[in-house]
Length: 61
Image (cartoon, rainbow, N blue to C red; front, side):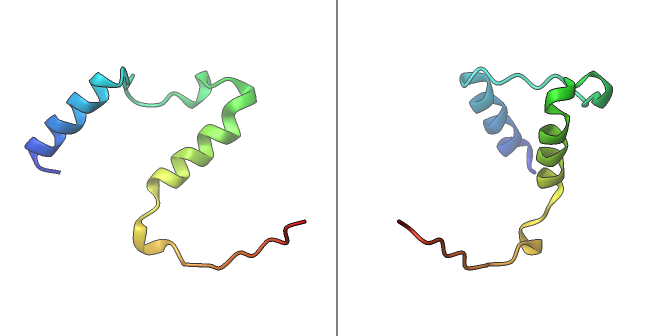
């Protein structure tokens, strides 16, 4: 990411009061949220090219 884009993203995050606290410390995660946080990290490591388009149909009542 180029420096200009990084600055824009940082400014936007600051406007939204988003604070990044640094590297994750898995051992400090609340037990009740560990799976959720791990899943979010896993999703964050995925690349767009690794996703497949699938069609999901659900029956509506």
